[in-house]
Image (cartoon, rainbow, N blue to C red; front, side):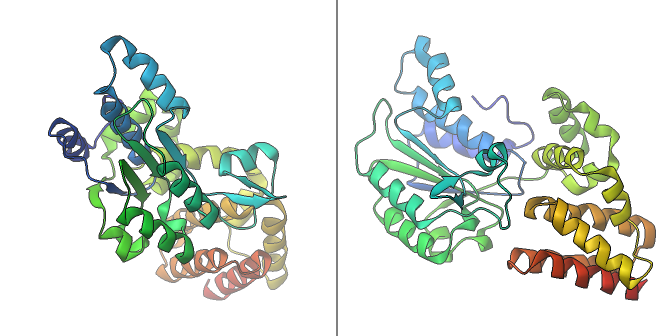
Length: 314
């Protein structure tokens, strides 16, 4: 079941033994860097968990239903944007061309939907399973509502996926069994990228540095790189030569890049500037930029302050 998952032997062993011993807890917390296989592990685990209740010949059909997200005992929850009365995932927002000014979040309404989903007995499976991707994006109200569900989950298992225990409300963490996921070594990273048809990424060292052992991050970073105008990227990787240059560059970034692209640009600039200047103050300034963007500050103003500060540093 776990054959697609590379480099996570410890997690595979813990999850496999839980099913074999019929000791699956009501809640898991999958922790680790984005793109190292947490979501893939969740899918493989659900396939293994649900396979015990079907005939062997039906297992391929079961796996397809889980991968397509249409199994009646599975609810997969992702952070969403609010747009014209609709909730859109990041993928749906990109398909609709929605310009995103802030990162998506898991909303209170989605937690209420989880509660409703778990109020009925499981269909075609030994238990209901709910997966919450990017659980760290829950606001306090949503997290508190989920806490009530974790206290009485019924015939169900919830899987929270987050970068670290500290990113989730402590009362939620205390009710989950932690499954750690680790960054891949260079050989395993290359194996995953080659196996998934992304071998060309291995020719881009800056993208690999940004990924830092995460295949998913390497793929996402490379895809983001393809969407950004090369001339803008070249301008951004040079320290502004004047106040005017700094303000003009900030305006271009604000006009042409959405929030997610701007956050990616910070990672790219940190790699580029470090190779050029080896100055920790530049990296610290860009971390301030990230913090301000995530705090919903006005992006153009954030970038103006950033480039003016870099102009003074250099």
